[in-house]
Amino acid sequence: MSPLSVQRDVAHSLHASGGTQTLTRALDIIDAVAGGTTDLPGLARQLSMTRSTAHRLAAALVARQYLRFTPRQGYRLGPRLLELGFKSQHDTPLPRVARPHLEALADATEDTVHLGVLDGDRARYLDKVAGRRRIEIGSRIGELHPIWSTGLGKALILDKDEAAWRRFFDLGMVRAAQRERLFIDWLARMREYAAHDYAFDLEENEFAIRCVAAPIRDGSRRIIAALSVSSALQYMDDARMRSLVAVVQATSSAISRELGWSSGTPG
Image (cartoon, rainbow, N blue to C red; front, top):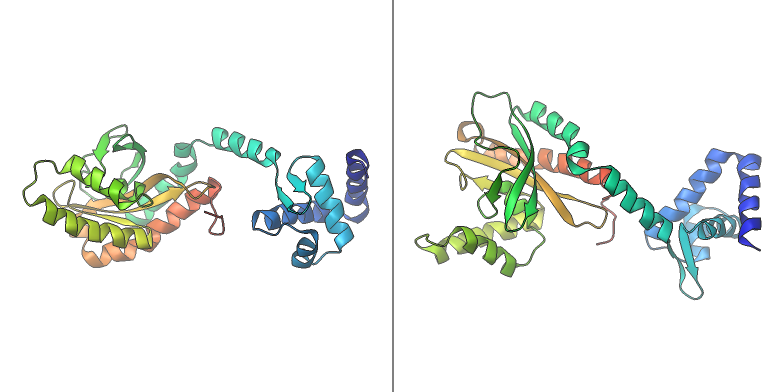
């Protein structure tokens, strides 16, 4: 069957059996292939459709380059999806996507919320939403801050190895007394943060200011940014910091989903 005849067949199915249902089934096939199901029997079984229906829809997706098919290897995601992914990423810059989520988080916590990215060896703040408390957080959009001492900075490097962590620590602690002892303690905290995908600033960057941070990921699960909630020590005791972890992570996950991440995305 030629690609043109396949497309005519699918177009006929759209009118005959209901366009929404057929479109949904085609999208289900793409999702199944993305999830690792690559053979026709597996697709039909997973999606509860006949093999002929699965083949007809998959063939149409191959013809339009949403999927590709290789004999004895099965179906894979096609170049058209990659093209659309790049276009979507270009059309949805991070600050614009994140801003409503940052505002909602600041409103819910009454604290100051930051968004930042890794810029060389430091964290650059891309956005800031002030809280409602009568405290001043000394930060400005565009500023560069150390990685090792900020919650946001630590969240940006959670996926890096311990050699990289050491380098970031040394950049900020060149003249510190008892540096090795400080590093041992800091490294233990970083291991804990990395294991649970969050980070704290325990007054390391600014006296009496604490932060709870979490990473933001894209469709490849790569950390591309981070956000943090910052407040004065009087509002950020240990118990509240722990309670805020889930709240901050929920916001970072919501932003990440808009950037293509999902909890089931292969790493």
